[in-house]
Length: 480
Image (tube, rainbow, N blue to C red; front, side):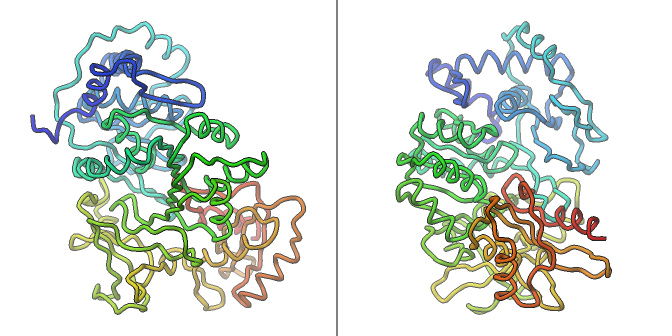
């Protein structure tokens, strides 16, 4: 068996053999050692084996993040391929998910057998033996993840062993930034990547696990987290809590943003909340990994910085020819660890992967200094009376207004049957709604939203991107 095909479970086994009392997992409510993790995971693996899970089968996990982590290792133990299906997503039957383990009433994919992970199931696991050996079948896929789903149809992506090579290269830098807390759950490529790095590097994995902001604040302080990673919405929720409590978290030295851009005002609040920490903005994709990065010093939130070492980024025209600096075009990206395409979806693969490049659907341009500035997404460009513009510009303008906490613009179909612009706002009770509307009209003119809706929260993907299509369907129906 080649080194690249080693069962990833063996990394945890090595940790337990060499450091049984070392920490495998920290959560807000428990700490689990390497030795305890091995016992629990092997008991789960025994149950998987008894149920008939086979090496190479795709096993979907619809479980709380901490339990999902244990099941992920158990699936590795049995030589299977794990995945986490986004809420509400319909899996193409060409992606043959064989099993779904869930603690909810989730409808399984048409190809899958569902197993309820209820109290009875967990009691059975506790009674299981754990003296079993892991599968010797080679594992070529570390995880199946799904694209963000902002276009309405999440697509399956296999993370192969090439991704592990890139993570190996990241280990030294990752060690320098630990303790490291990722707010992204393990259903995302970022979340599962950080978990994999923790186990392979023999470091404790800190799991946010969907905890509330007050709990996360305590978790960060308790473990003196040095590097915090999350979407802007996740980070702002923690900043809101810190401001509410009138405290800061000086242990955080680096804040890594992922998923979407952050308004400058929110970046300034984050630096104050973490006492001057370095704020890094990352731009990339689930399909091709990190593309660019930059310290959050620019006043332009769409400045995503400079190309990361090992990656190649170009801006091209409709004929796929590179365009000069300052010219807006389609962004394309390639990296050594990128995916080859979408599982079971040759049509989507042909549209997004061409000639060794991944086309994420973003528009942008290179500046004279070599940095990349984004100019919106092809699929998200809003059209107001023939004027097309990036919805993020409207979102950020709204968030500049006092008492607006979050915002997402969208198109909807009104009574006229024509597409119109709307915006959903999360606000405090003291918001001056007419002032917000007037400010947007003054700035955007005919492109200002004709519908302004207050909502409890903005629907977002696992990576923090606003689900504009969902908002458009919600308010289009209401408006119609």
